[in-house]
Image (cartoon, rainbow over all chains, first blue to last red; front, top):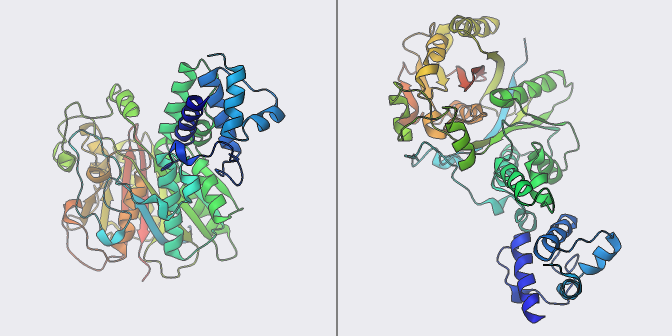
Length: 85
Length: 357
């Protein structure tokens, strides 16, 4: 799980072009949107694409998506249970 | 006859040092591979650090140039934003299309798609300046910027109130675009040093370039050093028509060829297109100074923007850089400038600029 979270943070940094940020700068439980990393709605679409491309996960339900994308921890938990690749 | 459109400020990002006019084309930049890419300024001065991470190169260039033009003119919110681009954000378009093929049309990044649209820069500028007025992007290949200028000219002519318009143009060069267009003979077959381009008119083709230019335009003079007084466009024109069009534009403005103090030409070293400039300059007296610019910025759909930026600086009193002078004429008081440009596939534009006396 720890390896997955580091990989995931690296993928988030690359996908969203978070310049000057390293995986260790992202807290596992900090909110990704709003106060935490300050991501926006386009970033959420980019994260959905990230999940689909790297883990074969498609999230169809917006409410479920909101929960999954709330933090790195919640994303890693969901990937652990639902990954297809 | 149209009323003058005053240029309150002009800003350009180009293959030369142009963003900061204090270093007007110094040092002169060149290339040896038939491609001229822009000199990037520090974009973080004009764009929010959170927003900049998602922007492609052209978007950053467009926003920074537009914002600096407004800043230089002392305008916070223009009444309208009007731009022209031949190709829009090529880099984002290429990313998006490549991903479509690679990912079998699934799981496509939204950012590349959003930014690949032609009017993306206008949208960013409108949000950044809180401009809710008329917002238009013209996409007409070699006439894209000219149509944007003409639209601005008509709006300013019709405006009953003092009005300011942010008008601009943007096009970027990518390696893939260069490769594709080399297959239809746009570029010279052998590598040419860009500064030697105008000495290489025995062969067909030219060199590729890119650039962004923005202008704050107004129907009121303020402290403008230059005004656009006429714009004419000709498609697939014969030599005689081009010559006539120059005469017409002068006659309509109650000028004769002898009244022209400076001619700026878009000569690009292409042997097949030299006739355009020979025809355009047919009636211009021998002692008129001629300046060229495409050896400095390369050929692209909206290179007229670079020429207009250059003309505005010369009108403002900057000494004409020797590297631009094709023919040194008699020095006198600069009053009338004519800008003649053409883009591949025979789009010819003629713009008359006058210095308010």
